[in-house]
Image 1 (cartoon, one colour):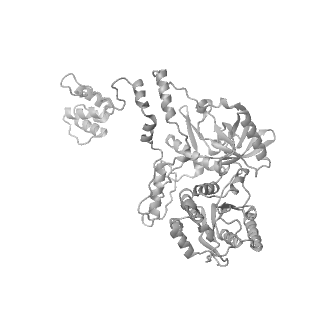
Image 2 (spheres, helix red, strand yellow; image 1 turned 45 degrees about the horizontal axis):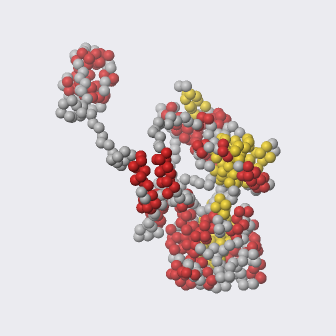
Image 3 (spheres, one colour; image 1 turned 45 degrees about the vertical axis):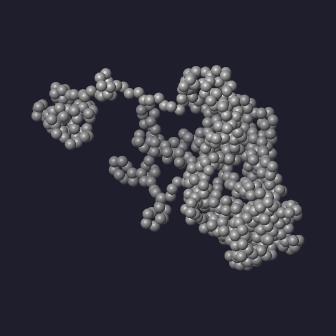
Length: 619
């Protein structure tokens, strides 16, 4: 039972995680995400920009390719489609929509699809698109109708449905009011079925005016922070990729809770993870003959009888004071549960009271959920604004999920920040900092080191000032993960060699040396004594014998005949070490080929039993 205790603890952790994911408030996500790229294929999209800039069509294909590869890496079960409108040729499931070309159906992305999108990039891609699809009349209503059929033909359950519209024409029908009405009607039908329509408008001569036509086509922004995204068109590939990434990324709450500000005052909030450690995916086990995935199942058997145990026959045990405490599963669940999940406001503290060492685990982000409780966004915004003005944080007790222990958390306000392109850099809300308990605090005995002089401190300050730079976590990619996926991509796409991966975390030694100049040598002269080389390692010392300079050897431990007889009579040969037993075998001429302890004991016993009558019986 003691050995199984750790196993059952691990099993409990998995159960706790699964139960927690299903019980975070009323939050529940089932199904797959889906994304449809609806791309304008008119002649205006193929016009190259100034100074050799790529055309709008080429930029769009590069963005589509990036999303395809990222979906394969991060969420390969999502569904993606690529549809062109304004084409001369027509290709759709029923061929009932003219000038609409379904290049990819709504399905999981794969290596073949990435290769087909690559073929549409560059000048050769523009020629292939002209030969395959061409440019013709435009009917956005038919294109939206075709996309609606793609969604309806999917038999899987979809959790998120999004359509991204790429175009550089703000009047696609050139004033045809009938086609405009049809497009507005079909867009309204799509939005009623839960499809979110986003406009990724591209730069064109004279600017892009969203108001007259696309104002009624696209979905309203999900929050006020996205109002600026729908006004300015994209003229660079980086801006378009950033905007698509902001829309394409999932915004799923880890849990939805009620923030209780007082009796009868509840604010619905969602907890989001802003940063999650990226890991290489685990390898999938395949059957070697058919390459089909295999599944592993766990069965629990009785250690003595070998019979299969049912879940009802298993209990949980923990050891306390050398006594084993056995409990039923219901008793374990009752011990774990404190209260229902939620956030409870305790009070406010100044920001100076929040120490850096209080950060004991990654922080999460708190954002209002207006759909759960009306007025939550207004009250949440007022609370965040006042906390920011008074430079205080809210102290709360948090139970994120069922069966989780309560924690003290600090809600630190965070204001919204946007860049020049009106793209949100940091969202408004609260950062949830988990605070330690008294049991978590440790008292460390810091080693006593010689203190530096003021001259040495000043010199190091100069070095630090020279090496300062503005750090951004999104500027550094994990080189191991990037190299891993580059290799997989090369194998999947039949590339001759994987793309080179730059290790951005490697120090730029030459640039550092140029910045510091003589400061490093000056610091060494102040800290180290003359002739000292910090890179050299001291030679290892060896203990030598008094004569000959050879290393000391351990003296042989000899066992006398009387001592051996005593061990034989008392049955304590097992207390001797293997080297002592080997030496005893040599001393008394016992022939043995075994090297294990029990083999040596058996050989000694058989050889020496005639010296002591009854010794073998004693053993």
